[in-house]
Length: 401
Image (cartoon, rainbow, N blue to C red; front, side):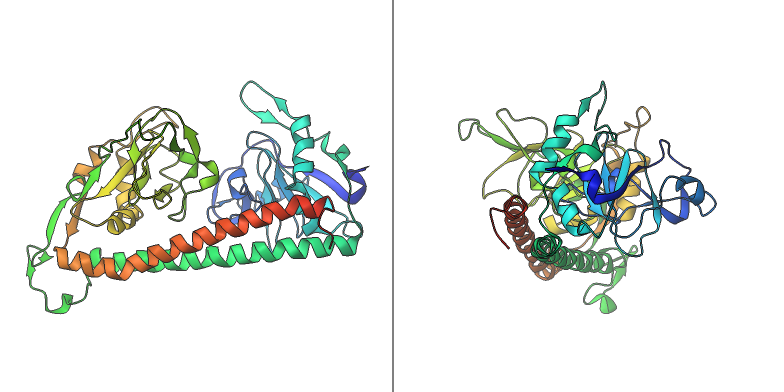
């Protein structure tokens, strides 16, 4: 075993403050931009101005193959900087700059995700009154055992093959959901549904359509029965499991509870954040992860939407619409940082509801998209589990390469 400092060019942390946000410019890399499974997620970014950029990169300018990581509050997140990235480290962020003559950057990234590295980080963790942190002065002395460079590259290549498949599947999901959203907008926002050219307009809507509050078009927080005699445990979905960009929730964050707590739901429901900053960040989820007949519970800080006059697919796609979300945001009241959506806002948001045949036609088009997303998401889960099983075995030499 040898200290990690012998394999790197240096360790650097970011500024201990937050700059004023800009509309564009270099990226201000925050904790939320690094996922638990080691990806750099730039779907939601903050910018700093060009004028401020030199000041915030005095300590270090992140470059290709640097390993960025979190060392305070949210721990154990690591990602590798891609080619072409231009930005600075945010608060509670640091980076490791590998010496590429001694360690392959991708191998080092995977090693940082391994149990061996995590255990050392946990052993150095200081639990504070409000957050946990890993002292950066201790990281250079973390002990590692690396194979030779050719073996490192082979191991990284094996694990990267899994990650490439996972990423391709994520892109497929993104394209499918984008198609469903565009179709919803075309039919029910712009009212360009099949046959709209010949539809008679009555009071501003196609004949047979009705304008009604969202609270009538959907069930809001419907009652869902749960019989304690059927099971002693129930799935609990925390707010963090909801997605900011897509329909899939993160099952790795689900919990099992002995007692039902909060709002209950079932497959086909939509989970909609009602608290800042989760709603503003777009946290929403479509429930497709339960077994037939199974019920789950979740945080009281999200609202459950269930099909009523509109279908389950329409309810989810409505919840993703910018206008619908803005209506909810403007209703928020409460102390700063903990404002909540007021239920009355769903009475005030009016939407055009088509007759049943139009809804059925729409569902016939989008249901296969939802089913394919569910199928791909399960494939991602299998690939992720396979990669996570391989990673420690490759790192410690149990599987030779």
